[in-house]
Image (cartoon, rainbow, N blue to C red; front, side):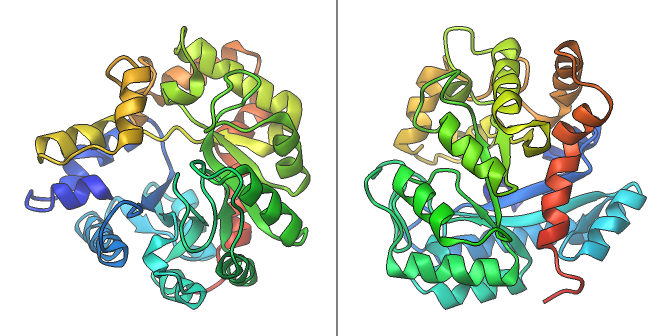
Length: 326
């Protein structure tokens, strides 16, 4: 959504820059994160992204559906339109108040991570590994699980990750939306086997990320990415692993064109990737057929392939989506 804010003066930027790629890649449902962790006014920045999201849905109603309910999801799966689901990448837009999650739920947010890399009023992030949930963080996790929202542990500190697992009941909806496996590439953005198992035991899903910083170098390529899929499946089972590619090279290019200053973490990731964030074979959703071919080459087929490509995320979404709109 950040890129669409930068391109809002253009006519129908979603149709020009994203929709053809998503359709080419065979994507049926796309999670659209609202990211404002580094903004001076996170709530205003997130609301601006909601505005361009709603514009994208409005201008492309014959090809796109805003998925807010289970019925919306079934309309998408029974038809030929693309479903878009809103999420929050970090809760900075709540301005420290757990009760304000209600506002974003009403706007259609169905998944949210507590933090980005930095700590906030709710929890510690990757930059503060010894800091966990605050009182506000415990309250917001309780409210999210009560509503049925998916709690995303991507970017969470190890302590936050463990405290959330210890806090929520077995019926909570959990995921790590985009990360890799520490056993394949020991990077702070990846998840170790102990936590992968714990996530699977709670019915959660790991979305395997296709950025070089997670995939690892040397050899940050499709084969190395497939190693992450294989390892996650061995540890968690194929019913708990899915796609979490995090295609952001195009977004970064739009930021640079607009004269925006890149965040330090983005600059570091570009350096690790040799000037790119994604692996060479998978830079956008239009490249998904290459990933599907690669997964088939590793022996995934039938139900196991369907699980990785869609079924696991759809199972989680069906549990998170209400019968009717808020």
